[in-house]
Length: 477
Image (cartoon, rainbow, N blue to C red):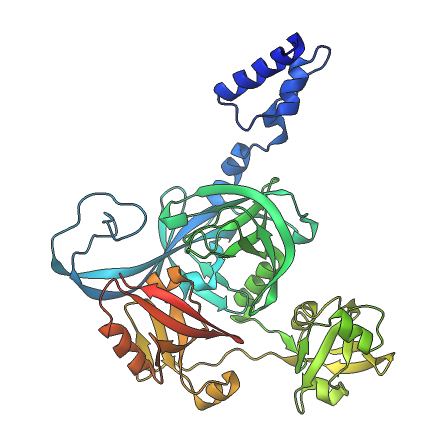
């Protein structure tokens, strides 16, 4: 039998559960039941985001990109009245069968960084470069122009013709701690000014093929349409741009990644000043230094970046760097691992001389290198080689130099992504190698293969992304 004290505790727990106070704070309930103690409400340990929303909500915008018009020879619900096949929500009956020209709409989020209309978002949100519409929280709409984009960090800067706009307060990602509360604001699936909350799961996260961004990982829910939206701390400071998710389904699975705001603001400043971003380079390929490799080189532990190859006549070659050197320090900044070196070098203004501390043949020595400039990807777009498909992919032929560099014999380069392809996770810069097992040699062939695929049937695309190859299913419609 239960004692009187235990019955009192049990009754208190049941009352809390049935009253809807979930999750139950058992320690708080126990304290309330125990004589001579004071209870702490369960909600006291959880943050209240209402004041945060009131403060930052007006700084967040919805972005819509109308990339092109195409004719649909099928039952086509309008964007204003979604039908059964238009997304996860269904409102109203489908329209009758008729030819209809429909805009290819892509949606995302952004936030105001200057009162005269400068807005930050993701580069992949606006890759189609069609008509861009920015909607504010007060329902005003503006046509936006692209000041510049930086695909390497996935940052874009927009400008609208407006003044006296509310702006975000920029925080310092260096002060962010793993485990702290954060809030993401955006337009998931077009649902404007939605807020989700979570905690910082990790800092400095390196993702495949993402060399220049040490991502902030969170478990705040981020879904399609939230890309480009801000990540806030509890003080209302923006600390990042929500950019990517890890997902097997295309939706939120608890792994969201944000670009640190200091990196994004540096990119924005350069785009506004000169329309492009300059980065340093020294012309080496590096790899991670494992514990065994470190031991073989006579290092006490696995620190630094191991030089695998040195570009002939490049800055590092002229400075005397060699394969098997381990770069321990660059420009006075320690290199803890191979992921840090590209970030450190990229931040150096091209043309500046820097000291490089390397480990070579069992001892440390210092070399001096003149940093070169990292050249942007040069991809020519012409009417003959450019092709847009119903999957939302804008593709083009690869040059012989690009094929040699990528070590592919065919394939087409993805220059823009929207619609079904964007939802499936394809990115600008991917190379499509095959369609449903058939090797692709040109943009024209790729378009013909996609056009032959019945509407609504998944297409298996074999893509190359960096050094990896993977299959991605994409369904049109």
